[in-house]
Image (cartoon, rainbow, N blue to C red; front, side, top):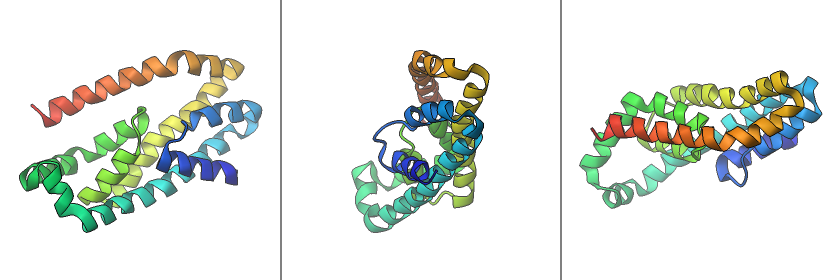
Length: 174
């Protein structure tokens, strides 16, 4: 379980491989521990997400003026910051569920000063849906879960990204 905790942290911070590749086979090998496995993965993710959030705070403190100037100036940053404060919870939820690197949510939330408690609640809900959803898939489908995941994960992920992009377009650019 300690190894899983750190693997989840590394996946959250570095994204070498999706944690699902580890979780599904592990849950299949230990079906009586699938809920605990999901909880440990979530704990590792939230620990790393907290670190990533504060990394965003640090980056904005250290290089904020340079980054703001580079990415469109103070007015653009203030507009984005206001929009994120209003819609940040939904954005964090979406990024946490669909296969967009979660580092985006962590860094932007920290850099924009989004409340850490709300960030962690959204991250907990989003990643909880993801990890406990896998445990539920194992519960319902058993050994067929891996085949179902391999067959449907990519189309569902693409659909999620398209829906998220459409939502972003409607909320922030129209």
